[in-house]
Length: 121
Image (cartoon, rainbow, N blue to C red):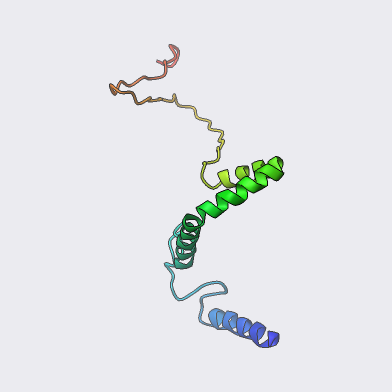
């Protein structure tokens, strides 16, 4: 049975190559836009959200039990779960030859600019 699946896959690759598309290409040149989620991903996420909603009480009870018996493991669980709800910090190095203007939004919509070097004016 494995040979049939392997041969089928090889046949499709040959078929695509013969059709001028090359391996890994499909009949839909546009494809799904980069970053968009597939229908399966969307459905799975909806199912998981519903599962968590329906089992929140049970999950809290289980967490409390773990926390009583092994606080270190409970903390590990909490830190792992936090990664799904708290954005992670991203660092970036930015270099530029141009002055940078930083605008801080305030209640009165006052714009605060960075001081300009006297030499660059």
